[in-house]
Length: 390
Ligand code: HMG
Image 1: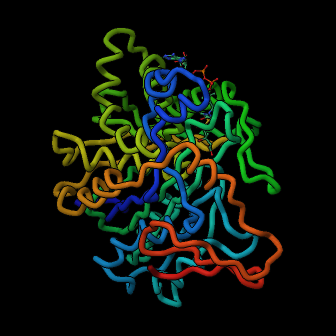
Image 2: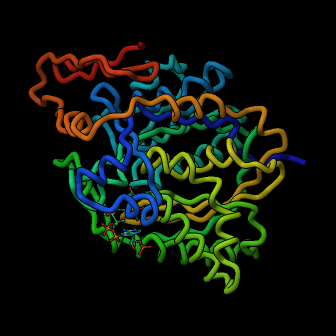
């Protein structure tokens, strides 16, 4: 039997700083339960000034490349909505930092949180044809105005995936259900660092898009929720994934026992996001990483459903089968260590970091050294971003 192309390795990174939402709730005079119970979030990841989407992506990709080498990689797709330049793809910096081969193509992709999914699916098609390997990285910093309703859903992180024709972790099914519609639920004009969002509307559009994408997927495959051992969702905050699965079950005509079904299908994918906040393009794949790392039952041979959502809006429902033996290829211990050993900030320290803006005059500027991953943004000079290995 030939295994369809898919994910051969998956590695997650988040920054070395975090803010406990208990402190944020006190500072904003909001009930802590609104964040923990209402949104389903506990902690948010905070990017220090010398980390950005490039350093996070490189940190996520490095363990994969340390293991498999760079020689077979012919393609790098970098999905982000936290791009660092209007012209040069963020992936070109990665190409240099990670020593990718000169024949490796590089491009940056954008459609809010959805871009990682189209990157993964295009990469799978290309490697299936060529037999070579692709690197797909998803990396983002979710940033809203201080004191806004979106603030407790902020976060940061990256997921890197090696895509190959003979994947060791997840073989992608060819079918998908897609729904695209021009809406203004969440966006970030080029002149703003913080996203603009019509919050409640965005949650309604997310669910409406899921409904359409699921209907199409179900019609094309004849599958029902019972055919999916687990479901991973785009996770702007973990309760959104819970609501999403509830909507999917209703749509499939399941009226009884939904809380237990949601618990069984979704809960194991939420733990990392609850600790990092929204990681936009990375969030669906952070959920998959968490599921693979923490599921108590082995998932060998099980089919997983995925719903990818990107505001604006595109949604895609697709699926894949976990490859037997996948547990031998995970970076579980590294992920656990990353999440557990972050420096906890005070609200004042978080706000100081948030308000520290990079100068835009192009003159020489060096960032103070914070705790980072293996790479950092050391400064700028003559409008050039300067990265270094730590
Ligand atoms: P809000 O208006 O402040 O919150 O912001 P709320 O009043 O709706 O309360 C939130 C939940 O907490 C509610 O639960 C409350 O009942 C509950 P629900 O009714 O929804 O089940 N609650 C409490 N629970 C327990 N104890 C309490 C308590 N008080 C309230 N004391 C909102 C919520 C999500 C709108 C806001 O955080 C926001 O704007 N977030 C950013 C936008 C967002 O995340 N949208 C999600 C869908 S769009 C998407 O996913 C795409 C995105 O990732 C971007 C991209 O694609 O690039 C964002």
